[in-house]
Image 1 (tube, rainbow, N blue to C red):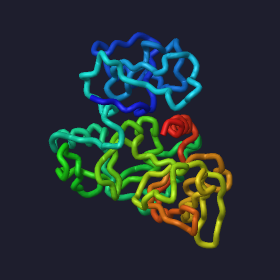
Image 2: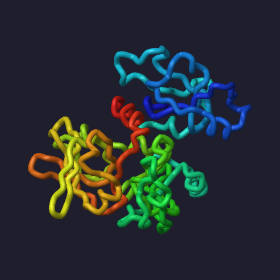
Image 3: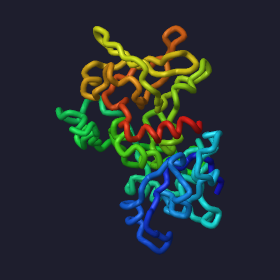
Length: 307
């Protein structure tokens, strides 16, 4: 199976000996330390594993220091285990495929695939979205059961399966963000499910030719302005200088997005529009956008360097 570089957002590093095919997977999942390609050093050689299929990984290039060309640094599966199936080995951007409805349903049951039929229009509770440590609390991200949804996920074009869905939020994606990068998602307006890592679209990549289809954008906040009705979150954009997100003040307050959020990363699902020569979007639902917790910024920065 052909493998695209940079699909593996992090590896699980085991300080104590752990052997693939012999030791329990749950030990690796509970005791393995997530490390990005940039955090890898030679002391970890032979002790890093894929967080999905759990086979041993290597880092390329295999050196203690990060390559001068940071875009080349990545984890990869070892050829010895080439016959072991793993969704992180699929070709980039082609989407996830399932042979049968049972296989797809099992992926949903195992939370390897999440079907989002809609974004929450309002918060799920009256509680604050953040706990005392600044992390999202469970009530802020609690999904609702959505309708069974026809999703095109067969190996042959046009084949569809009916699968259970969730009414969710981008906040849910940002909680355990590193793990979610390796999960498959189908968002409202999507043609087929893809790994979250393949769906992320950097606002720095927007050009005049970028189409208006709905995407999961991410970018760094550079400014914030409160207006009489809407607020504007200004996002970094190399091509145009800025990208405007029009938000609702009551939602920003709950999400703790304000002038102090400069320098933070934000994720938002929307279609692209234009205000003269400036790209913009409107987020009308509470579930369409969220700040990324600071502890996951290393993952988004690592990803940003490689696209």
